[in-house]
Image 1: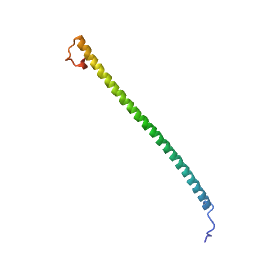
Image 2: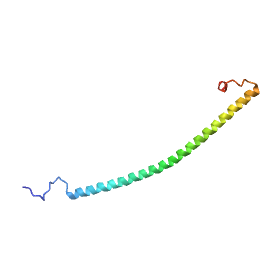
Image 3: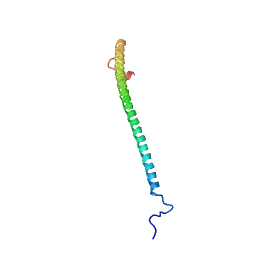
Image 4: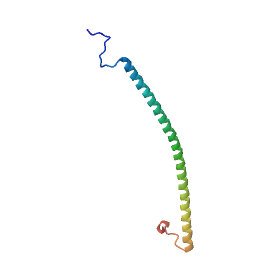
Length: 97
């Protein structure tokens, strides 16, 4: 029979395995911390972008309303000019564009 306290020469010792496992555990903890930091950074950027997006939406709505009012005013001016020139008011405005 073989003696139990003799290990194979090419097999790692338990102490070496424990050290390697502790190193791996430490690396995993560091990776987890970095991952959490990246998530926090992305969350913060997401909040900033969300606020910017809302601002852009409000600006776009405001500009659209402004343009609609301007188009309405221009149509009214066209109608007034046609009346001044004595053009038939029954003509479709879109035909004259």
